[in-house]
Image (cartoon, rainbow, N blue to C red; front, side, top):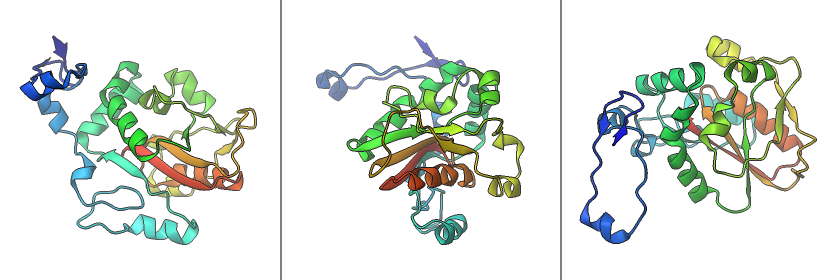
Length: 230
């Protein structure tokens, strides 16, 4: 018997006849049906092709129109879920209370999406943590969310730099200076490669575009991004 990580209630799993005939291995569930329904799947709604924000119709949002003027190519971010109250509670437990096991809830979905959209010829580059943040949390939540994929650490946070965007307002996020440098010890040549940047939440896009600039200056050919939430 499995128990829901969000509400601790029992998970009642149902296996229909078609599934039995498929001979597929059962996939462990980490959310009950009610809790899963509290998360809003963005693929079911029109969204901004630049960042994945839910829209009334498929068009660039105001933020991405501004990014388009600053950055030649938009990241075309794919976000799986909207950052609503359920997602806020999830990140409070996973990211800020440090319950590492919560990565399991969305790990398989994230891997399935990235392997479908960017299966061959792409490097998966996670957004790194500052040394100070890692010392507090003891794990990188982005690497945890995308665990099971071959990740390439092409970015590092500048020495002495602190990234705690949860404590910044929108203006402060957008004016944040470049926190990253290229990881010259990765042993990977960036020139002419295709890069998928991986992060947990797309808020203003500032962090991902900072990372994209480093990749572009290093010679990356194409740069996209995937996040759990928008």
